[in-house]
Image (cartoon, rainbow, N blue to C red; front, top):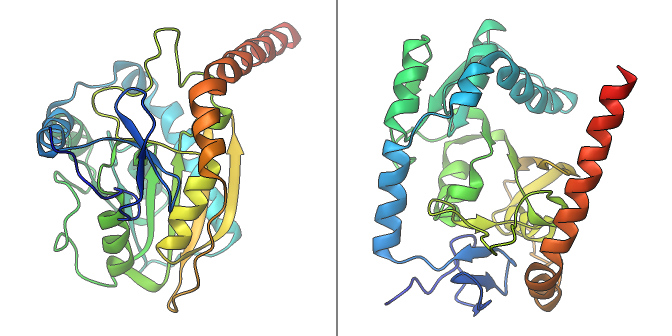
Length: 282
């Protein structure tokens, strides 16, 4: 079976097999990803188009909206938006972020590949497009901000998406993402050694996230890693800066193969203790 020979995060050819669940790591950016071929790429796309609704998220739509808006509010510490500024929600799902931003009079448009999610969002009156992001989906220099929450884990062509982001962002544009990452996770790996579902493409560490943003010429102005994931706010740079890699490939492999399960279990126990204490104090 012939797999893609370039990293889907940075485009480098320096890939090394991890010998675990058909995964590989990039020597340039340290991204851990699935070994994709055209068949797996097609399956991933079709699964996203037809995926089922997350019923728990629909039942708690207001709670999800407030959580997503919490991520958005963090960028207001660095810049403001006027009525002319457009915001793109990349992978907008049911439109939980769109709904609350529209109520607050922001100009926002969603891009959602799932047909079911798109229809639910459209029914709620959101401005949303049912498609994957392509080179000509939007005109250049259109958006002041691109938001992507819990999406990058499923993107098999991150390098191409970053190029498009740079194209459609304004000169003073920003990128805001929140993504699960394995080093502080309480749930990434289970006893059956399953790490990726059939639609997941990547596993991130803090190092690989920083490397990816630097490689694609975004200046990170906010970086916060917590047990439920990492939030990054980055500004588009007009001048190319020299790339300097952070992290070590051998430590990343060692951590992922031998430490991840045990640390995730410890984090899970600590999280449950925290929840129990919180409930007692109520």
